[in-house]
Structures are given as structure tokens and as C-alpha cells.
Length: 94
Image (cartoon, rainbow, N blue to C red; front, side, top):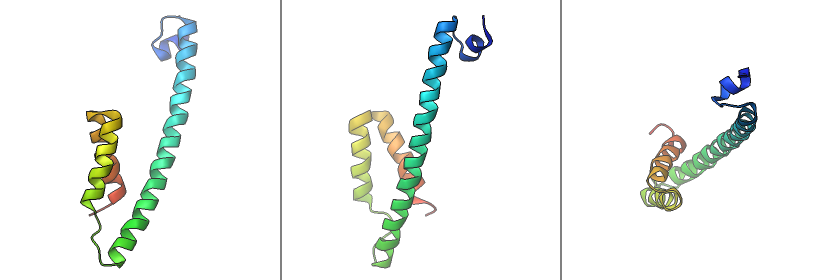
């Protein structure tokens, strides 16, 4: 068995090649997701600053529920957990 097959957990060189290529795609997608999350944090910070400057509260709970419901509707129960993580990341220190 080749080293790449061992590294991928595959039983053949063909499977190892496919897995290696797919992992590269996942790594590329993860990098894009991280970039989008960083952009979301920046936009969220801008919204929070404006809301606070205008006398509002930092967190708008009904808006957060909209986000949670959207993630849940698209991804199910795990979407709810993901939405909660994204919202916590974007809120910053409370």
C-alpha cells in the first residue's frame, strides 16, 4: 500500500487519489467559509456599533431568532447549533 493510501485511510491508490483531491476541495471550501465568517464578523460589528450609537441594545434577539430559524430550516438540528456558534462569534465579548 502506498504512503498516500495510508495517509488517506484508503485501501487503494485510486481511492487515495480521489480522497486526496476531495480533501483539497474541502480545505479550499473551509478557507472560503473562514473568510466569509470573518466578513460576517466585520458587518456584525458595524451593525452593533450603529445600534448602540443610536441608543439601541447591542444584541437584537428577534433578529437572532430569524438567523437561527433560517439555519435550522436549511440544515436541521445541527443548523441550530451552527447558527448559535456563528452568532456567538459575531457578537464578540458581551
